[in-house]
Image (cartoon, rainbow, N blue to C red; front, side, top):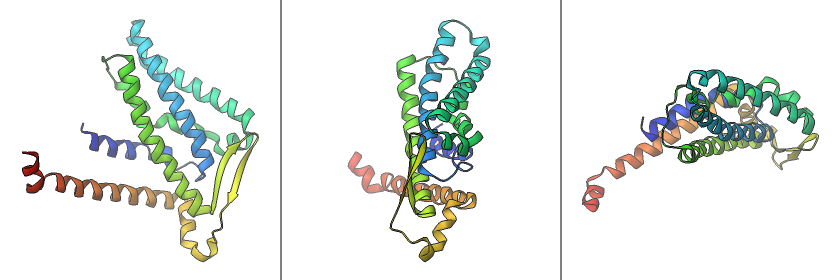
Length: 210
């Protein structure tokens, strides 16, 4: 699968990660932290399984590990920021549904732990940046606020932005609004990539390469 097709696959498969969660930047940060922890640790567990020659138990071990890690993270979150744990509810487990995690159950990778970890964290970085920007837009334009997680609370910065003067932007705070935003982002990405591809394949570019 080419890199461009992988990006389409990641965005489509991770709609379950992006859409149901509350459209607040603070909650996105919390889930992204879990997502990155999961990706780093599951890579280690994946290679540990093969090192100990437990390939037949791979899916069972990975499933138990991911579930245990998610439960532990939520319990820790309940201590650090109870309101976030209560608001997110089962949404805290949505990063587990991300395509880059699910693919571990079907993966056969033999290039070594370090290379695999670097590759996975690159994929994780792309998804993390995309998700953070996505929730930032929803928070700022949908609610007129910027939220950040803090000890025992969520800090809310109210922006000098009158939502009543642009009520259409409130639509971004809703689930249908989130779907529309994802569609617009994907359409913009496809448009830009097609333009770049056309420029790269133009006769002038081919002559310069020759």
